[in-house]
Length: 218
Image (cartoon, rainbow, N blue to C red; front, side, top):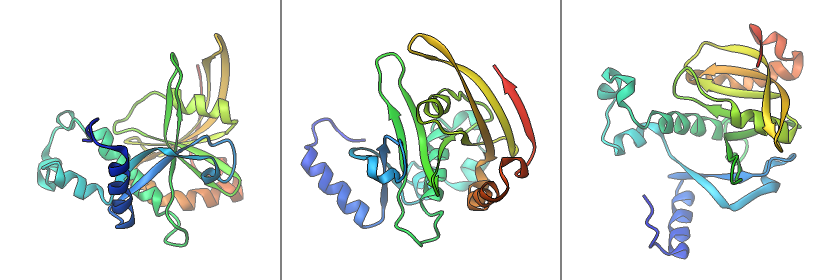
């Protein structure tokens, strides 16, 4: 935890040292209005990922045997663990060919805040990425992002089986209901390592080649 009494300059210096040592990685907010995402990043807004999810669990006092036998309802930080796991995998999708960089999207408004866990790009295509620790969760932030940035494909990691859904959903925009249409690719958390292969298929053959497709309208 970071105290409000900590001086910003000292805190920044400490974070910079940990980043240089490779112990933590910053995930910067980007407006995500186009490519490259780094050009629109805000260095003053970021969240941090630790080196490894296993080390995070150990620091929290958990070991593998305890987690394996634990009822999922007892693990109060399962959402943070899932986000940490996916984040550290996304950072190194390029297999060391590029310096690891990762971004997220945040919209701060009085009545309609929205945050997408991660945003990545391949070629000229931007993909919002949501992480869920369970089998269900709201798509509000992804739909808002897709509406604002005119993206067509979104990725969600959760505990469900792989699927592709063509979703049509209404969101409130300036006191009006606006319909947003996206293709949602859902993958189980453990399949994050297959994301590059998935991108290759999408680029060459489109989403219809990836797997089962269902339509959802709300």
